[in-house]
Image (cartoon, rainbow, N blue to C red):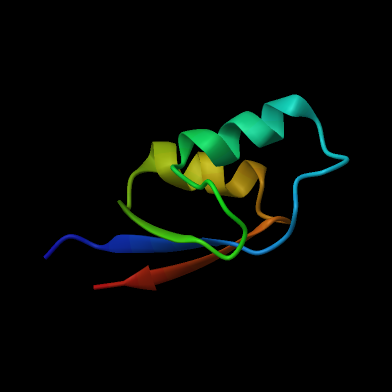
Length: 61
């Protein structure tokens, strides 16, 4: 079984650098409080870590 990450956008990106806004877009998040599920890969974890102050990340099976 592969592990997955449930990523929820919890805080607005207004006032943060454009690069952080692009990371949120590239994760597939469009609206506040939206959730997406991604495979648990080093690339996704790195993106989530870069904007961890804006996201809620949970591991799901």
